[in-house]
Length: 376
Ligand SMILES: [Zn+2]
Figure 1 (spheres, helix red, strand yellow):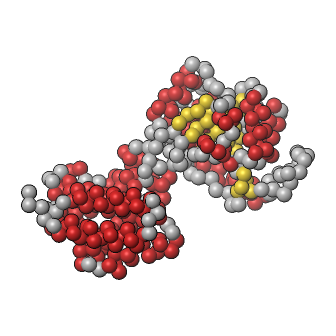
Figure 2: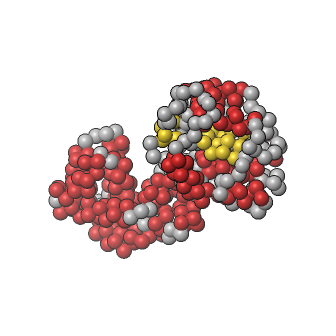
Figure 3: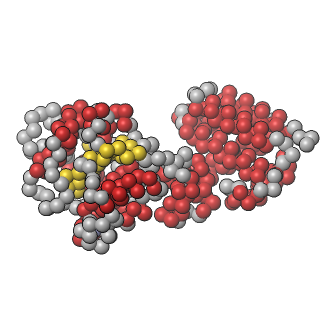
């Protein structure tokens, strides 16, 4: 509870706390930035804080309002997401159109997960757009009865999914916002929002998370041992959700592939060198290939540290024995050159170069580097 529920984002938090302190909260915030950085988490925590009966700069966690917000079940709070297109979306609004019961059920389940973990991604099958119906509901409800007295807060998550009628409806609301009503939009695709909507919101940028922020969160929230958390954080490129995904068995599997790749490289087994990309190749999953090369980078970096007697600084502490054996054998080779060619290969993967070519070339270069002992 409280602002600690949001990982990192110190700058955004301090802006929001100051706004609350000075009682200058704009009617609309736009939280924008890359995926997995906590845009929804920030918006939800701000909603909790503004709805809290204690009225401080941090949700108290014990008042009636905070208790309701623990489950995101506050009558004055609504979380708007994309839903499957309904038959009557284009029909006149007769007020009787409601989402199908299976959609309502799916949404309820997803909201429970979101309440437990604000980083959880809401996925409603066949969700297409945030529709004008959802936005009309906002206008209707924020001016009328079903709410309790006090502030009303709407989060529009992945706001770029609003279709044009919904965008225009929201724009009308933002032009004359009802009293005590706040709109928090979140998006990773600010370029897809109407400029007129952007200009009516105060923008809060969510930065990529630091590796140590992600690693600490994985350990605190998911009980992941520090060494595995470090490796996942390093691979996640500032995206907490990606780090969580990587913690499935995937990382262990890919690390085994890295060691096998090096073995096949040194024995000149080209078929073996290509094996790790065969599966990924079929699915065109370049992200998995990037993971493999990123782990190879970490391997060379750690081996270099051990070879240079800086073994305390290695990332993969759980692979220390294997790394020490590797460093004993190849520590006199130019490992920083191996790092450089691996980095270059990673660059080529991102530029969509033919994968087998990248791997064969990398394998040949690494073998040449490792077998060439420096004379210094
Ligand atoms: Zn409270």
